Length: 472
Image (cartoon, rainbow, N blue to C red; front, side):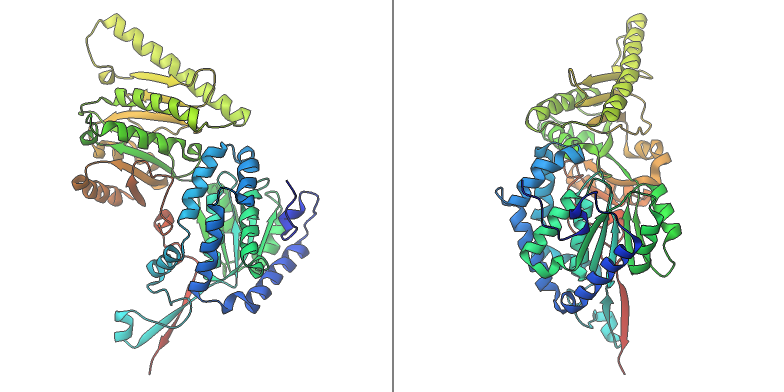
């Protein structure tokens, strides 16, 4: 394929030697361009530009989409089928109506970014307010998944801020393709964006970057966020998204012959989406143990479904180190499973396998590390090694799940629940009290709505400041 036009620093490739001066000048340029044009747009106009660009990405013959599906899987470590599914979900949500709905949800009124306005309580006290967006919004993106970077760019455009996106090394392709698609829709948007790559630890470049932005978002490990937070000047608004984990809970009500097949399909969708690499992917599936189907049989059915998914939606190649980690983890559970079966034989006890202390079974893809299901009678939360490696654990009720997940309580992002409608609200209330930021049905863990509150915080509200106007 032909190389991309050199619109952004990241288009120039690794041969480009960045200097602090280059970074500062790039920041100042996009800020000037934003003031000359982007600030003149109203919310509806920018929402329509974003929506039109999203429509192009949904066209199977779109050149930038085809390029993404051809080149990005090798960088991310997913198959083109998995990537296409994730991109389609993201871009289907970028409609003008959804974007305006996000503004209304977070700011109270779609006009908040354009003019002084007020809600009923404000107007009764003679007040109105306007949301002030950053002139230059900076982003430090992670390299494991592309969607958070694309969403960051989208939010910045909705605010009509100039943006400088510092991409993870070797992970700029999809953000660049998205930025190029926006520039094709409206060339002046391209002049308000900048993307660059540099290795972590280039403190001189980062200091130049930090000195120019008014607001900085960062996605990555907790250690990385803490390091950045220490070095960002106090007057700059900093929004960090650190390491989070998620799990699923299946109630016995959903384990009937009528419902169980759908539950298994939905669980498999959560495990295969982005190969479990995101913070919203499940590490463990907790299954209530008094249903028609036992948790062990659920694990076996899930393994069968993952085997089918591997045919139609293969995991794709992963780094050697990650494959070795899966093989090592498998060997531990293979030994534990063998020990558990020996114990059953020696005791000659007619008992359910799940009732045995230390009961373990493992199912795995033959000849590869493509998928793994471990049934483990120990209900303590276990971190998966990801790439479609999932634990299934039996529990009596949700309170037991929360007790055994207590060590990771403040790291939990999403809990997917399979339950009857009349029970879901009560379960969600218990999860909310425990501190969970998002509760969703199984099958939708990696498909949050556009307006979801990331880590329980307002998506746009974290990025803006307010000016109040008090009437005479």
